Amino acid sequence: MNYRHAFHAGNHADVLKHLVLLALVEALKRKDTPFFVLDTHAGRGRYLLGGAESRKTSEADEGVFRLLDAPRLPALAEAYLRAVQANNPVGALVAYPGSPLLVAQAMRDQDRLAACELQPEEAAALKDLFAQDPRVAVHARDGYGAMKALLPPRAGTQRIARGLVLIDPPYESQDAEYPQIIAALRDALARWPAATYAVWYPIKQRRSLLPFFRKAAALPSKGAFVAELQVRPDDSPLRLNGSGMLVINPPWQFDQALAPVLPVLANALGETGAGHRLEWLRPPA
Image (cartoon, helix red, strand yellow):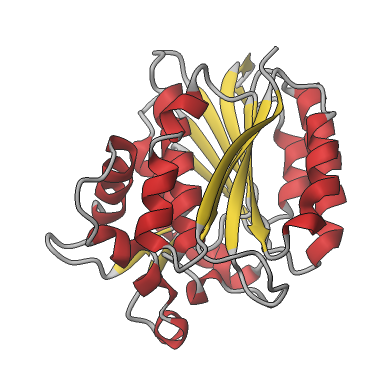
């Protein structure tokens, strides 16, 4: 695996993905009972925005930094920015938190996170990051295999009923990734049907995603929708024109919570031809 997220940390795709992720975690926190989060492709957990990789692409300049300058943001966007800035000096954004760090910052004492990363250097950095946090278990392993091994989750002999699985692969295998995601979701829904599943996917040319959407809609869930942000028209297979989040078994009225923020993101982060979409693939049961 050659992918390194440090080149892309804080870009428009991270903004959408992490805003949705944090909103899902906040929904889980509405109940006192503990929850479990599995992050299948966790990366290293924190990325220096002044590092060589980040500055080579400067993608954060068109993502999180542009959002920081936007006026009158919806509550979900403001909450996302507060979470991003929480791990930084006051008034500065020098490091961007990856999904496992954002989840860990938001969790309570009774909640648990399992973060998986296959690439050895990234996994080692992730283990160092959470070495002093007993709520977080870092697994240097394949995330799809971890879904089979760790679901349904347990705390000792007690099963944890509520939770979230984030599937955020690098898509190095491109279109071959989608059948693997569908197979993993089908198996996980059989093991842990009450959980929420969130899958990030890139948008280069939308028509290539249609088979994935059809298969996701056919999964045995209580409902599934997609929330998408396009920063430019999806007419190039060579550029990341946008991205989306497939949310399966979403919390009640979660789509209504996301709806106001998507046009704001498109306006703040987009170029000419930017857009957004929120559509149910499988209406709520």
